[in-house]
Length: 457
Image (spheres, helix red, strand yellow):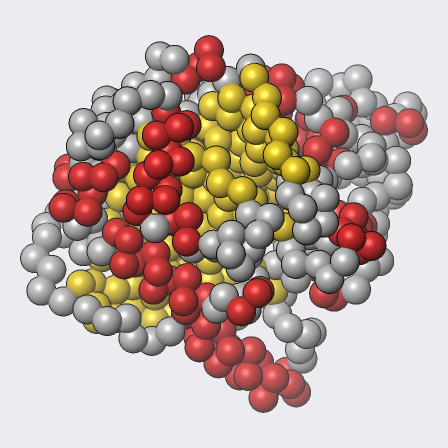
């Protein structure tokens, strides 16, 4: 791999781009077909400021790329390049992306990748190499050792070609079975119409019962497992930071049937380009408008790492440091991300955009981001999910507060998008999260809906 250092001036935030030339030299996306991704998010603490005692400095970020690559081999994807920054490491993969924070890891993979088959290895790495506490076995030497997560989230939309998936991904039922056999306190949901585009969500809840203290690499001898082979969640040290430290907001736009004229720009042959995939990806990022979703004129420390595949297809990761007024508080601030993936072929036309940049940061509202992204791709149909922590704890007597939170969430995602009609609007209220799901179709769109259901119930 080769590395390039980039230092941003505002708060001396240094980012380093590392490109894996050995992998990118022979990369070809000819056989890519399933655009809709599997998305896994595993939290080991509520925030980077609340890592449990005994965890290595920088938590998951202290794990070397070569160790993560071993886990990614089980998932069936390779690392193309890495953007390292003070607060998050962004891995651009042959099949989508991975983001490593001190306290959580986000893994998003497309195609026929076997994402869930890498989950046990991920939990083992968190215990052995990052030092997170574990409860499921006696000692660190036990090959089954798995760090105790704070929360686990797994989601995806309905597949276009579910019969081609492998392992537990052959159906949502099998994925839920896999996760339920691994974790305690998991819940599974289907959001949207079963006979149209819909979205699946699996999430764990904190364990409420009292367990014996967790074991760590420094105290990993003696004792006995406190439960069955299942892994509990949410029982490590409670949050000691403020509520603001633990705010979580994720916007996901999943687009199908892209405008075919616009889709040409993600084909290698349509570009007056020749050169390496990363260089071409940078050209496309600027040309199509994705570089302007969070423009450097407003977000001067933003960094985008992108790749144009052969013969077509595109992936990009963006690292967006949170704003700071001075260099004094730069070390304690958060960093956010966005990621984009495009499969432009008509038979499997798809693009996704995901970000956890909070609405309103530097004046950029969620509704503006949605409008900007939709105008880049002009899909025939798309879904929007906005998933975020509640503004404050509520009780049954706080009905007005719940309604205010939901109105705020709905307002962020906008009701009207020019040229589109809203088909569904669904709001879910969970214990500590709110979710808005919306499904739109373009005015006059006449595309086939044959592959929309996909799953066999």
